[in-house]
Amino acid sequence: MSVNSRVEAGSGGTTSNSGNEKSGLKKIVAASMVGTVVEWYEFFLYATAASLVFGTVFFPNAGSELDGILAAFLTYAVGFLARPLGGIVFGQIGDRLGRKHTLQVTIILVGVATFLMGCLPGFDTIGYWAPALLIGLRFIQGFAVGGEWGGAVLLVAEHSPDKSRGFWSSWPQAAVPVGNLLATLVLLTMSWILPAEQFMSWGWRVAFWLSAVIVVIGYYIRTHVNEAPIFLEARAQVEAEQAISYGVTEVIRKYPRGILSAMGLRFAENILYYIIVSFSIVYLVTVHAYDTSQLLFALLLAHVVHFLVIPQVGRLSDRFGRRPVYLAGAILGATWALFAFPLFDTQNPVLIILAITLGLCFHALMYAGQPAIMAELFPTRMRYSGVSLGYQVTSILAGSMAPIIAVALLKEYNSWVPVALYLAGACAITVVAVLTLKETRGISLREVDAVDARKHGLAPATPVR
Image 1 (cartoon, rainbow, N blue to C red):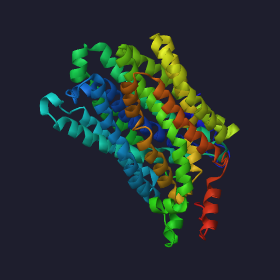
Image 2 (image 1 turned 135 degrees about the horizontal axis):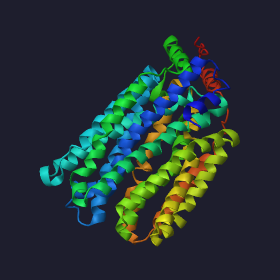
Image 3 (image 1 turned 135 degrees about the vertical axis):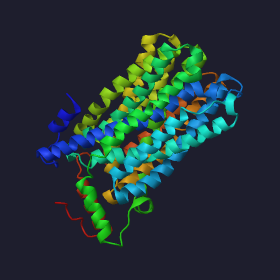
Image 4 (image 1 turned 180 degrees about the vertical axis):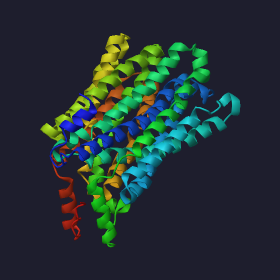
């Protein structure tokens, strides 16, 4: 069944059955997914290139191969450091001016930064200016992505029926593996058709240049969507009552527990993902000298499965609740490294694909429900800031550090066991966060706003006609 047909089938509940509203929901899903594919194609392209190329092109004097990769991952972490700043800035803008216009800006920013990465000369040409410029562009890229996620998922979540919000808001999440799949596919194609010397010299750059094409498509689609009525109501409420506020400062003061819950939920999911898609490459290439093309092909197949699984997990969160599904993901995620690395050590292509695919399925159990859970934690007037802050700040401690810590542990102990313990500890933190969370399946976002209004003595928002 296509996305469009599923929208039509699932647009009951709090969403009108009129043809116009169905058509509008189709556009929202498409705009969120296409834009997210663009953003994450570019962001994950950097991750793969950092594992395969950047250590040689930009850090040739780092010493050993692992040292060069570690240096590349440190620049990779710069993007994560920029993401909370982007989340704060664009969250504030998105809560004030709207989700749509904010997303148009973020997609242009990340597209320009990624295209210019493909134009950068290497260390052999301009010396230390090469890694310095790479770091600057990576910062811009991360800054833009920091504002992207919250807007993309909220466009869908705020339009979705209450009873199926988990399913529909999981579609932007499903677009993430599509972006990663495209990045992997382009690099895989270039590595297949070019000799190794040409791939390292210029072939990898083609993938960065191609981003310009997808950016134009994504920007065009995002110009043809409308804001959710609930957002327009909240904005009118803020404008009418000058005493109330919105954005980052307000959400930190009024909803600190919501931010901490979002961070705890994000922690293990983020670490698990980057161990699978980034460190697995490092482990197989450096420990077993595994063929790069075969490894990229394994990731490609795993991303396809990941894409198919995420919306179905979102559906499960609507049926059985946010907490049990997320808890299953955290517990299973803690077990992944215990069987995955022994399977990697066999160097059997089928077993390697199986290990990576199962890891991404465990990840989906946490990842699919995040937009619905986090949207349900905050009122509309500060929702963009709340979800962006909780989601992106955690990326510094989780995703940005995961490949660095894992590579350092591998270098120090020459074993995958410390990496498995590190992952298990991260999952334990998320288990605690899930257990302290209230179940919010099926809750009305308008009721969340009404509770916020009663709690802080505000006049109720006026419905948009």
